[in-house]
Length: 110
Image (cartoon, rainbow, N blue to C red; front, side, top):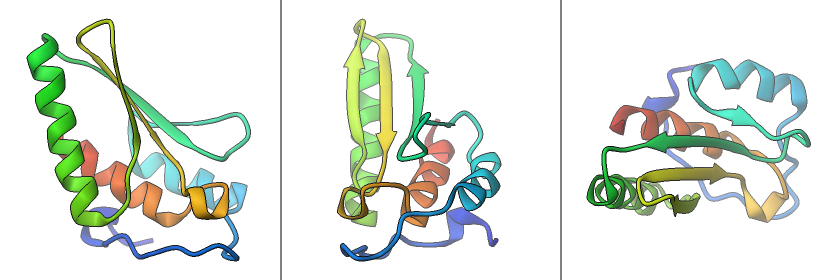
């Protein structure tokens, strides 16, 4: 597959099937630091920043990127400087290529 960072997220509608496990396993190495859930329905990554302000700044960069791509992660800040990102495609109840595209672009931020 092509470089994920050169692709853009496309709207995904219900009725589209989630990615198969073999496709997820093929894409996962292209987004270092991200892990897949046991049910293969989401990918997550955690970051430890230097302090709370750095965590918020990072979240704001992710938010801007997500808004531009039209695909939004679940975001948590915990223990004041740690950020957890979770990606899935709600409309299909699993993972789509959009999740991996956004993960690859987030990797370019941090």
